Length: 483
Image 1 (cartoon, helix red, strand yellow):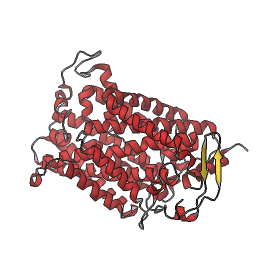
Image 2 (cartoon, one colour; image 1 turned 180 degrees about the vertical axis):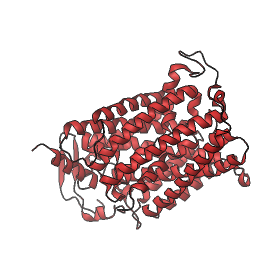
Image 3 (cartoon, one colour; image 1 turned 30 degrees about the vertical axis):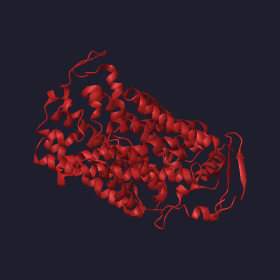
């Protein structure tokens, strides 16, 4: 047993088949985050930062699956799903403000097994998404032609090393840097929109030849199934905005600021989604955009505006890369601190940043990025995301029904009808990842099952009862029980 802690008391939860113990203050002292670092505006910036790279690259591969019509329909459906998801998560985050985010919500609603399953799905999403973004950064760097730089593994290594290093300096500094980069990225989208309007041609939207699929037309060149296959790529316009609650422990007045921050972020992203999808496809053509690693630049052609967007596009990609590193480190930190994963992963440095929780997924992500398969990695990240959405929305429904007395500073409009809608669409999108690439989705499923086996065979007997997330779940359960 490590010298910094002793087991004070053992408890068993026979209903879930888990065992937990109490750790000494020294254990928790080594695993503290910096508190009160962010208000709602910084959280909104964090939410936009998570996602803004999706406007610059990745979404366009959905044109190859469904054409403009298929991707446009998929984007409307997915935007509605994310609105429902954000409203439901705002309620959960206000009621359960802890660094675990989705894991914390599911832990309270579905028990240790459901909590770990949700946290694992989020980890899959957040560990793989930066790898996909790294490949897109490489494509933008190469298109600039600076100093003969070519897309390659050393570019990916450099960006991982630099931005993990910034995160190790502390959350306050990291969030402020992220906010500035995100603001620059939004300016880049505005420059793109202004330049693309003059190049827009309605015929470009439907220049993919119809296939022989059922329902195929110029609007839906790959038929009805193309709409379904385009869902994972439409998700890239919003993927990771749900990570805002991961900053709850580091936020001032989280019950008020987290709901405001996440809903504000979604509002901005809905506007950028519509503008980019319509203007980039209309300016550059659906066929050409469907395979481009830097679609916004390609849509503008060899112009001065394209060069500006290319430079600023790097800021957008870096913003998401930078902020999702933050997200995966907090999710891994929370699971480790509570004993679900090896506890060494949650030890924080002198600046209250979780060192190994930042570095270990970064090493895995870098290894994945060297494949250079951005579209494949995107689909894998969406697998983890949609699986976590299903579990989080199930948590919202379970808590609404099973814990009506639980304190809810914010309540989701529409209640379980809202979260139920998000659950159904997320499940449909999860299945679509197998349509896009069966092998990649099965690999992710295998990793998920491996984590669950680890929990079932080992870590369910090692839980830390007085970790904040576990303690919060227990307190909330007691307080919400009918008297």
